[in-house]
Image 1 (cartoon, rainbow, N blue to C red):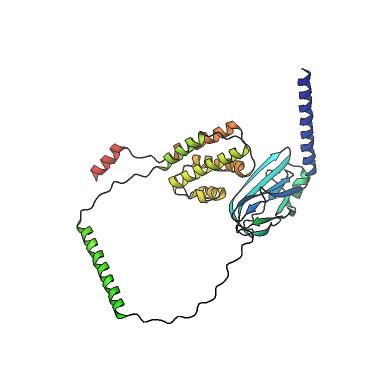
Image 2: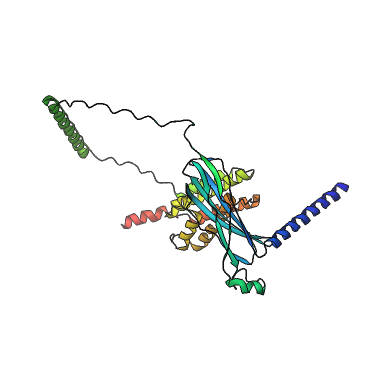
Length: 345
């Protein structure tokens, strides 16, 4: 019993310390914002990917404008996304970008500039004090992150030297071709042409053979089989959960591409959502489209924003993926309907 009392006391002290720390951060950020930029790895080689994460912590009464930078010297943008949340009175906004190194040597990711000001009246932050509301028309303030420098390793072995240029060979005299050689070449060409014409004539007179056509596997069958294989796995640990969510996202993206013709495997989450908003996929009903937007946002939060889902959440997102495929699968016409259509034709 004495151990239980001690454990409760320790837990209470830790909880009070956490609350004090959260209150201290909220007080420190009142009227200001802080921005940090981090990368998930610095030991990279030419062609490797890394994730740049911009995190802004600020007073919830502020509106934040994140930079839309998509070009970095020496890197190519592969994917991007953003999340926002409010934790213990602190507004936390994150934007991540997956970059691919395309140049070896010393590289620097430049500082990112974030703008902030008191939120306008009627917005999410309009419930603040009257003084803050009066400042809603104030000029933007800025806060910048520190640049990030590192080396990108070359794929060439150390010490390799470029091949030496050989000397130009001396000119050689041109020997005239003998007439019999040209006659032999012309004869060979005539024989080849005659053989080709004879083969074409035999093929034309031969009866055409009808080869059976192998029906293509429907996109929903491929997706459901892949989801069954994924469900048989048991992700243990943060790295395994991230791989699980990467695989789940790729299955649904491939299904959308095979079912609706939208190249979702090559598009970012923001580009897919924009296509849905423009109704580029008219065959996709609105209800599944709303669920797809939420699915893409939730999986990105795990893949790139360090969100760690519970086991129940993992099972729920897998069940939704199955329901999405079942709801949007292409309905094949019944055999009797097909035969009746053929007879009518």
